[in-house]
Image 1 (tube, rainbow, N blue to C red):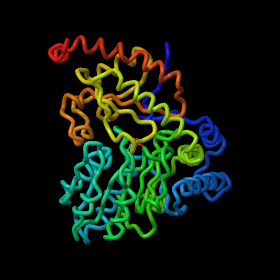
Image 2: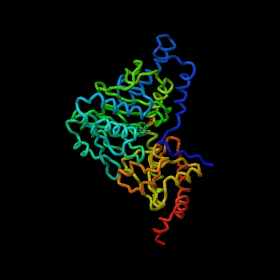
Image 3: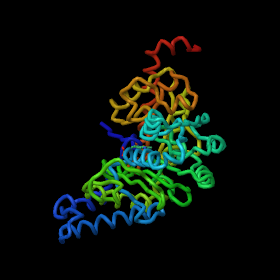
Image 4: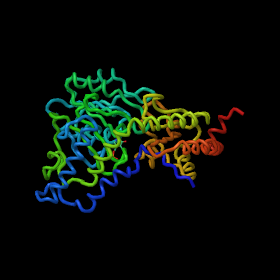
Length: 389
Ligand SMILES: *Cc1c(COP(=O)(O)O)cnc(C)c1O
């Protein structure tokens, strides 16, 4: 049976060259990078090279790169770290309704601690309005956190414009760029951001490692204590093989960006066009300002979960909403924020393409989808009532 992976938004396979780069650090190069002897020094050298690669990939300086355990930790460290450091200056935080839970729940957690949190609405495409951000800023605002690219519907946010406004008003600006890196150019200076989160496993690196970019001069109050690794912002012996993998993966992600993104975008557009032809299917997210590999649709009269299971029987891996919300019966907070009713949100299907996908695979998906959808619809009492024939 075919085995087609269309869930790159959830995670990506390891790039073979990333595995090669990591191997020595899982075997011979086992020293602790904090050790003074040659075993330690050699590993330290690899670690600092990985830091150079991460910095170069996003236009940062090496000392502005903090290696973490992934996107979730980077987002939490950024948001909670800034909030705690700036408490004396103000208590207002601005974010959006379509953020990843790592951002949204970190902000809502701060609300319980007495911070005033504004969760901005989005338009029908899932996009934050720059004017809303501007209007929400008060003299109490200490932090704005708006993602670069949405993980569920792929919509790209006007982050550079928001960053410029934040800078002008003296407000610290964080962006979650986990889905963006490798899919579009990411430069911390063009984006005018002070903090930026990345995760290796979303760009063909290993799981459990990420980066928080911290612009020099940005104050964070950390919550873990121990050694002085990562300039005390992330104490504890480093995940050396992971960091080496992250360095190589981000280097490759940037090098291969143009070639890969164009090819994937073409496949995406073919997939979108084909799926819309089924009828009573709605594209969720922005038609053009979206991640090159993201397809998110609502198939009327069908539940997302049933679709995913039927596709899985045909060897096709897809998801509904985000991996984190699958398994619960709550519809996606992103789709609801975009104004979809519960039923339409429940019928959502996310197909996220990546480097390994081929046109033959897309053809196969499009050949089995109509049959699956009509079978599921034929079992739906709602559909029977709506049928015009
Ligand atoms: C996957 C993801 C995260 C979480 O990253 P982990 O490394 O899995 O913790 C955060 N934000 C976005 C947008 C993501 O897609």
